[in-house]
Length: 275
Image 1 (cartoon, rainbow, N blue to C red):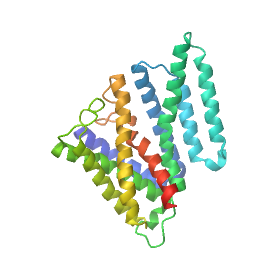
Image 2 (image 1 turned 60 degrees about the vertical axis):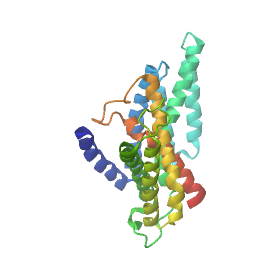
Image 3 (image 1 turned 60 degrees about the horizontal axis):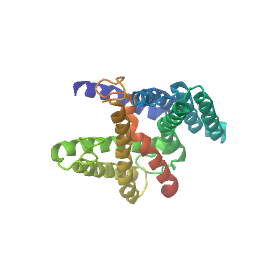
Image 4 (image 1 turned 180 degrees about the vertical axis):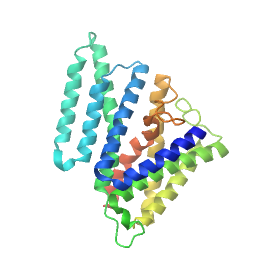
């Protein structure tokens, strides 16, 4: 617990500074996170018995992040670059003597690249976020920083609420074959916590509290699904954590797994409902 507290005390301020700077600094941070998470993921896949091409997968993931960071520069070419990446990975799969091994490596590499590149939706959320209305308490943050902050605090609040309520009141387990510690009570605690935080942040960003009441549960469920998805990978690999880069917390993938599913949900919600 001491290691976790020290790591959090260092990382949280760094993340907040990156968010405050935004723009290219945020994009660079997401790219670094994606690259490290990619390497961790391909190690897990290998441990689970699925061969892959980690270097090609990491490059494809970074290409997708690059497309999100500079949409005007690539102007739609990001999809073309992704398609080329899939083709190149297929060509690399030809080197496997057994076509079945080549197929597994091709599928695993493409899956891994697109899975970790879901981090790009943090950047995309900043691009699609609406402007904060004049007079709103968090007007000074602007749309990009304000909505990404909402995402960060909401996911952290889900993890905290689920952990505290689950430890104190957790009785009924669910999906124990994936994560033995998850409880229905923890899930409810996390959803309530997330809904409160999202509602408060939505109001501070000048939006209706109804948005928070609707988005909060969706975001919380997405965060939980993201956590469980990584648990599937770790279970298959027989690993407790994705890595050891963060003392007391495991790997980078362990820290961003919830965001991989939550960020696309928030971005879609903003596009479909808020804007």
